[in-house]
Length: 75
Image (cartoon, rainbow, N blue to C red; front, side, top):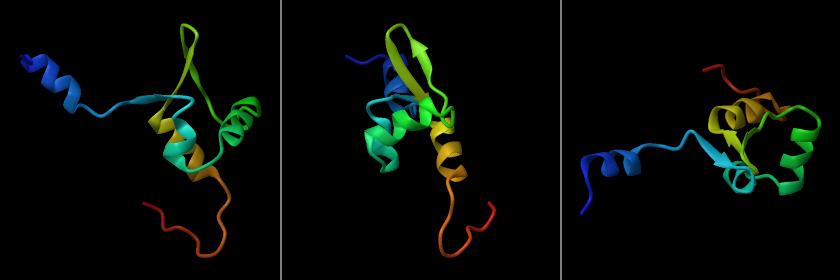
């Protein structure tokens, strides 16, 4: 039986993902994500031995990448 707290947690959107999941979410290679971390283009957080990346940080990094073709409209 689920309690109200359980259903609230399962309905909530995650605020961070494991570094291993980031490449699939943003559509780049695992190597590119780790390269961005090494080059200090992308910030990770440590949770014990685990490395996590905030989704807002992934969005910021993707938005900072160079564009080609039509320039994006500012939101």
